[in-house]
Picture (cartoon, helix red, strand yellow):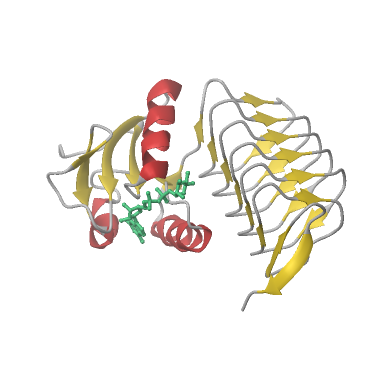
Length: 217
Ligand code: JB2
């Protein structure tokens, strides 16, 4: 990588399937130039989606300020993404958003840093999307929803108005949530579930209607 940094250069942390989509989005968004990927397994000299691997996590501190100031974490696992987000933020990196041009984000919605919004997603009026969230392909988030840090809304989910999703929670593909429901932190809602009543923190719930199946440690 060349010496010196540019304010519109960005590196991606994670080089798997999710990173390929984030590369795609950032390329089409045209706000940032993706200059490299930091991956735990892939080595320097390899390419992911045409982007070179520039190091592993031990290089993250070294790059800051000398080569790079912008980053985005592209790892689906919510705990790992949360850990890396806090590490990069504490170093001083600016965590950027990757928002696909086909996503519809209301001007009255607020999207915090490090969030990825995938093709065909909709974020409607007055919704609040906190840091390091994934709003995956063709998700629909209606008005006044609150998505807290590090949660992941998997492809095809539909959240009606006024739904809250807690920190680090995963809504599996195709989950539907009726209006005004609160879903707690670090829970998992199984694919295809229909959530019609509140879900607490640290549980696995699924079904139609969704029921608590087990508690997580
Ligand atoms: O701590 C880490 C770390 N942990 C995993 N640091 C760094 N720098 N890289 C890490 N990785 C890397 O993330 C792995 O070495 C691997 O290259 C990548 C994870 O790839 P995978 O394809 O297994 O998962 P993903 O996170 O890209 O995608 C998951 O989540 C998406 C949202 C999949 O479930 C996808 O299907 C899903 N769309």
